[in-house]
Each structure stands twice: as structure tokens, then as C-alpha cells.
Length: 460
Image (cartoon, rainbow, N blue to C red; front, side, top):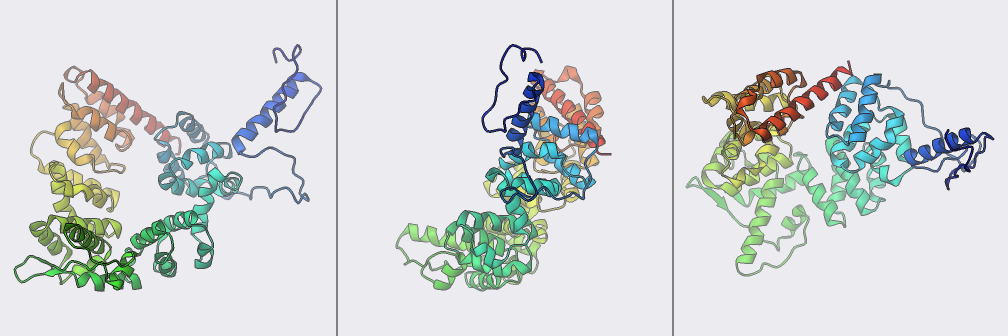
């Protein structure tokens, strides 16, 4: 090591003092300890099995490590802070492998910046060592919290502070079952308004729960189909104690004037959004499709509330009934009430979403171009099927100079198009027909697809 013979080896604070006699070896040892401290999140120390101040070593792993190329790819993704990190985690989950231990600290740091989207994917592949390591740094506590949510009891939940109660309840969301009803009943009466609001949304996904039945009774008193085939609405009374209970608010005296009506309308739409959707079978129509058509023909705000209810309750049957109407407005780009369209579409399985997009594109008799394809595919926020990817590739091949949608379509296609289509994208572009910005966007798309293609092959 150059210079170690002439200068004293620095001794970083906070690490054990080591002196090997050889300055070069001492420098390397101290640098290694400093690196371990920085990556592991705990001051390095010597551990003896019988030391009460020590800690238990990481438990043995059962899942295998990824192929060497995939492990190197993960390190590159973390160094680049790549948006493709989530795709790597999903590939690892499908392959049944775990994150290499040397990448865990950086990955725990990265996922801490987006726990709602990234933490579940990390939990699936972090292995036992990942959970063990998360106990040494409060910034990584989200992973242990997520794991603990799976076995959470009412008594344990009740003992946590409000912020943790909210986080634990949020972590239960993907695994919510009828067995969680006691926990949700407890949360609906929580002293924290934030916790009550989350519990109300989750309870809406259990249509057979006591809370859902209370909501259905209350909602049925305020909305039905009138004799003139128009919605017959009775605005809620803010002073009604039963209404206040099901909405998780305090009863309050009715105010005079427009402000009172606005509050009562808001409570009505909140009630409709949370009441079990089957409340409206027989009241507004015989089937979900009948109810959706009735709302679309008579009251746009009612349609919006029903769409919001389908999203909140994760109800695929009602999403399928509402989608043709809501997305017709959304893809037309002229109706703000269609804002739940993308969320409704996201409730369906990926293949069904792609089939919906393909049907719409094939129904358009115009030659596919970025301008005609983008308004449809930008709402399909999942991995695209080969058929949909081919349609997008064809549209890009027909791009014209000045086509403003080329850049946006390339950005949407990068993480979603099948990576096997990268050669098709490169070969199909008529370079002379697109402007400079279009060429740059197409080049980035080709590079992204090529990168993803290699990443997928590394897991084989």
C-alpha cells in the first residue's frame, strides 16, 4: 500500500483498535471494519456466545441465493438507484431465491424511501437474515413491522403507539380476511382519526362484517331508485348518532345554508363509497351493469362514488361493470369523473387489463400510431402481454416526425413492454421519420428493453 511506510495509519473513531504490525495490513483491516460499520448499521464489536450484552447471530437460511449474474445485477441496480429494482425483486420471488447478504443493507435503505410499494416485495425475498438485520437500525424497522402484521393480535395492536397502529393496520391490507374483523372493530373506535379512517376503508372490503351491515342499512335509507327512474336521495343528518358511528365522526348539529348541504352531500358520497356494493342490487338496478348504466345516465357524482367504492372494496365484479363506462370517458380525455378509471382497471388481473387495451386498439380502424395507442395503454400499469407489446411496437414503427406522443409512449413502454421485443423496436423504427427527441426516446427504450432482457436471462 503506497504511503503506509511514511505516514501513520489513520484510526477511525468508533471501531476496535487493530494493529497488525504491518502498516499495510493494518490499513486494510481498519478499512474493512469501517466498511462493515457503514453497511451493517451497527458499530462492529467482538461477540462471545455467553456475553449477555451481545446478540444472537442471524438464523440459518432455507432459500437459495440467486445466480451470480443476477446478484451482480442487483448490486448495479442499487448503485444506479434504478427504477427496475422492483422488477428484480419480483423475478427473485418467482425464482424462489433470496437477496445476497452483502446487498441487504443498501436494499433496506432504498426500500425505506418507498415502503408502501417496495417493502412487501423485499419481505418476500429478504430471507431470515434480512429480518434479523432490520432489527439493528430503526430506519429498517418497517420490514419487521410488516412481518409482525401477519401474526398481529388485538391485544398487541392496542399496546402500540398511534403511528405504529396505523402502519400495522396498513400492513394487514394485502392479507385481509374475515378473521381480521375483531381488529378492525377495535380500530374503528380508535382515538386516532387517521387510524379510524384507514380502518373504515379496510372494513369496506369485508362485506359480511358487522360494520358493513351497519353501513348497508344506513346507506339504504338515503338512496334508492325513484318512480321517475331518477335517483331518490335523502341527505344524511349530521346529528344522526348512527350515521356518525358508521362514518367514524362525531355527531354535530345541522347548520343552515349551503355549507350544511355541502357537508351532507359529502357524507352521502362517503357513505356510498364505503357501503357494500351489493347494497344497490335491487335498489338501483338488478345487476352491477344495470346499476352502472343507471348512474351514468342520471348522476355523474353517483357514478364517481360507485367507482370509488369498487376501488376501495377491491371488487372485481363491480369494476368490470363500471369499466366500460368510466374508461370510455377517461380515454376520451374530457371527463374528470373518470379519474378512477385507471384504479378500476388495476383491480383486474394483468392479462385481463392487456386484453381490454387490445380490444380497444383493434376496434379503432385507424393505423396504430403513438397518438392513437398512448391514450389506451398508459392506463395499463402492469407488465404487458406479447400481443399488446407487438401493437405498441407497430405504433412506434409508424411514428412520424413531430409526433408528440412518441416520447410519452416510449416512457410508458420501458418498464412494461416484454423485453424480448427490443430487437423489434430497433429494427422497426424508421429513423428518418422521427425528430431528434423521438430518436432519443426510442434509443432509451431500446436500451431499457435490452437491459431488462439480460436481467431476465440471468435468473434462468
